[in-house]
Length: 127
Image (tube, rainbow, N blue to C red; front, side, top):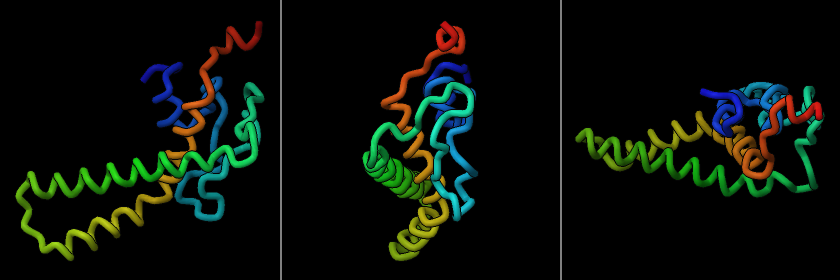
């Protein structure tokens, strides 16, 4: 994965602007700080909260990620011809969603930030 792509920033949890500084205070499963971001990048000083309520839009991304996950699991069970009762499918998928929700929450925030913040290499930052 190449630095300078949005996917690099999303998967590595790096600043969307410079891809150097960390985006989150902690990992997604640290429930006391789940999804909390630094105020500014430690490397380029880009602000991660450009306006109040900036991350409310991340709810839409989170909804899309959660829905895609559930549909993918449901279709995989059908394609693989795994015979499970409907109630067991729903309970299993719900438990999986519950376990993955901190990760989905964090991913949605960094995806949302990457939509609005553009990468600038360190060479261009120093000019």
